[in-house]
Amino acid sequence: MIERAPFGATGQESSRTIFGGAALWIDDVAKADRTLDVLLQHEVNHIDTAASYGESERMVGRWMGRHRDRFFLATKTGERTYEKAKDEFHRSLERLRADHVDLLQMHCLIDPDEWSQAMAAGGALDALVEAREAGLTRFLGVTGHGLNAPTMHRRSLERFPFDSILVPYNAPLMRLPDYAASFEALIGLCRERDVAVQTIKAIARRPKPEGAEGYTTWYEPLMAQEDIDRAVSWVLRRPGVFLNTAGDVDLLPRVLDAAARYDPGAALPEEEMDEWMESREMSPIFPAPFE
Image 1 (cartoon, rainbow, N blue to C red):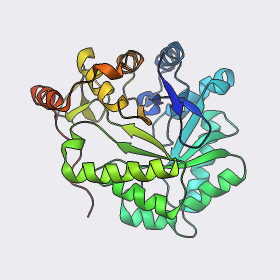
Image 2 (image 1 turned 135 degrees about the horizontal axis):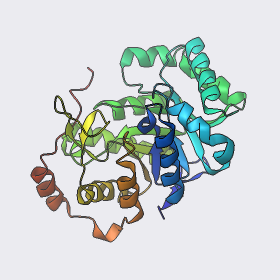
Image 3 (image 1 turned 60 degrees about the vertical axis):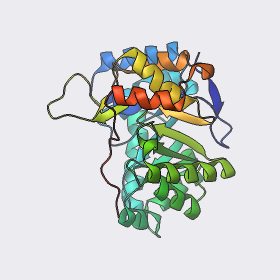
Image 4 (image 1 turned 180 degrees about the vertical axis):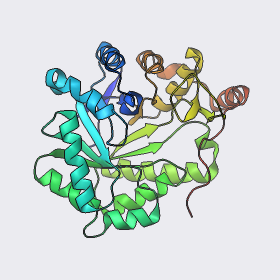
């Protein structure tokens, strides 16, 4: 069984490995049902999807009539104005066949201009707060991709008491001194305020080569079970963080299997991690951050 931990100050005990709903991008009912079986088998109790994840909300919504009480359900809006964010969230509720979600997040809020718009009067944050006040969501969060995500999340937390953040975290990224410093500052603030920390890109190997096939992630993932075990273990050995699974249904069982077998005493020393990353030709997957 995958370990569970408090999801920040929400009172929720979530599986430390959260299902990343981007894996259900395509309208494939059979594949979606097989995915649900895998989640139930591993007792994953937390789903993270988004309005922009293709057919994901509809696929997840098919499960909610039978399994709503099993899952902490999270979605996201990428809109930056009050009206558009409100409309998009209500469409999400329809697709999810739910009268509420547990966590509503502002999606990929890392561009400074978009941040200013979303956080201003009449911005998306107003729609999120209104949804919480109406009982349509219990908690609010913010997510981000890219090298400046930790810095922007700290800015968001100074502006509003979000319940959770979502941020990239893997060994290649943490070899970048500036990223590592900003990530550690973010984690310190989250620990101080009891904000839940979700992490993404655990099994990212390197940027996706042109014409690459065999997986649906936008980066090249690690594929071998031994390598996935090592990458998953590296993330989970940091207490209190959650690992959101990759956007590929076929990789999902390997990631969950690695999480279920996670042994904190078996983690590689950092110098051996460096050797392993070099042998797998791993590198950060993000371009330079916004200025």
